[in-house]
Length: 530
Image (cartoon, rainbow, N blue to C red; front, top):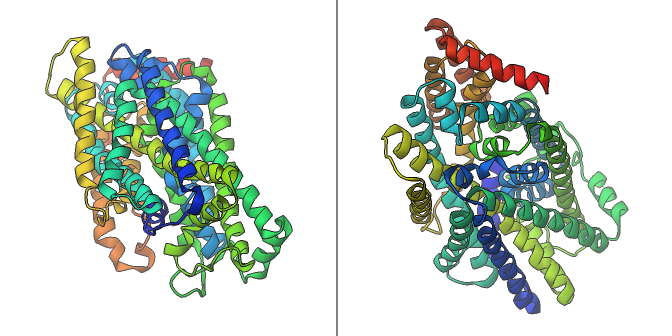
């Protein structure tokens, strides 16, 4: 997401001095990284074939499914972007962002999760491109297009995660960026390549716990340092329109500006991206029991809304701390998005125990980034080895060689991501918001039609993916430059166009074969009965 990229890029620029707590913080982070590799090794014992490697053998329990899906989604935006935006601009933009993301999360779990779990098992699909191809009985064109889309967006997306980790270590400990990035990348590669999907999912569960602990620690410390919750609330109310949902503080001028209808709609549109996110959709396909989806939905929805609201409140706390003289005043987004860093810095100066908590916060920042990077790495690897090379180009391998090849492809893709992220001053983070729009517009409409519209066909699916991708590029690079009503997030118009194109092309071309419609009816009946 756009705010996530800006926060990750801006927050990790400065060098932070952590005083005597540096060694404690470093040991805490190292312990966290070692634990991630250990989880990968343990998960490898349950990974016997390619189906286990890419989908965990559909063995995920409801808690792991829920928390790994949300951890792989939130990224550094949760701990950095939301607090920084709330600190500087007040309630309007951050509140509408939270509402949009929560609605998208809930509807994705409500409508897509269970049906995709049933349908993907029925047709034997273990990846998103595999699902589209088997759903529409087109093993070449749909498979190839969707796999290429994943590679185009996920390789640089993964690179951004590696870069974020490198910049964090560089900022904290003043170590070489490239060395720090390589160490972080090696850890992610190790536990993902060893344990596959199960490793990514269980580490994501742990990472979600680390994120949660980080948020709780920040709130407790911040309220105490600000003099109590009443001081935080009074400070927010004393700033003109700080708590308004229709006006926001302009980051460039510091003046008030309207947050009108178009701004609200554009911000809410982030929620549409969830219907097309491969690393989230894979969690739906992997849950052990389809009847446990409701449990996962409740856990995921509650965690998402509470964690995002708490993150926003941390921004309010940071603003109060500035007025109390505990923190400096931040007047730009570059500064405000380092609120958590500065709060952790203050904590680390209060003794060894608080330094450990500061280390947990920095581990939480790593957790946000790693939980997204590992899922993206696995999705990109599956698209290359299982979908492109295996299905499209017909590469035939034994089960043992498939496992070896899957791990080899994952490492190769990770190396490409490292190369992309090699320049510490690159604008790789800007790709992430674009990738969110790309996946949402290309896969989202197709996924919804594939699951809920029997008359949709392969021609409509192909046209929907292609048109969604084209509009994302055209709107982002050309139309949005016109300003005014056109300066909206490209996901919204691209999603609408792709959905319309898929419906029109499906109706204008041959209806799907009886085999496909019978299969659709059987899945629908199975879902409705349970």
